[in-house]
Image 1 (tube, rainbow, N blue to C red):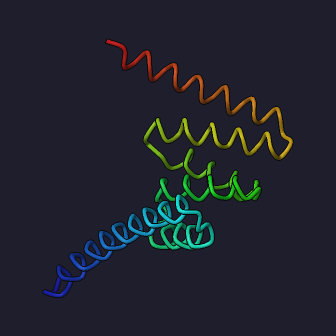
Image 2: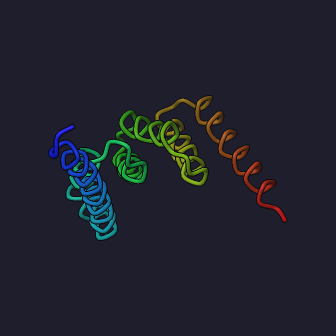
Length: 133
């Protein structure tokens, strides 16, 4: 290994950390835009957040909620499914199942909506049993 190889790996780690930080920044700013009613800017920021870090489950959840509000059900379903696939945070997974259930219901798929609501309830019950003193 040459002396630049160590710098390259340090640089790659730094870039990944920077992308993660920027991704969180855009996600947070997108939430602020959404709260103040600037939905177009919010959507752009959620998209940018995910370009910088395609594993940012918070950005998928936030964008999914915005898409659900806009009745873009297929895109919202995709984002909520991504949260369920990627997240290790059980609370986020429960939220994603709840929102995905709403998207299924609004798109007319009552069976899928019921299945997701059941999955959310089961996860919540398991979490409460585990956290019970």
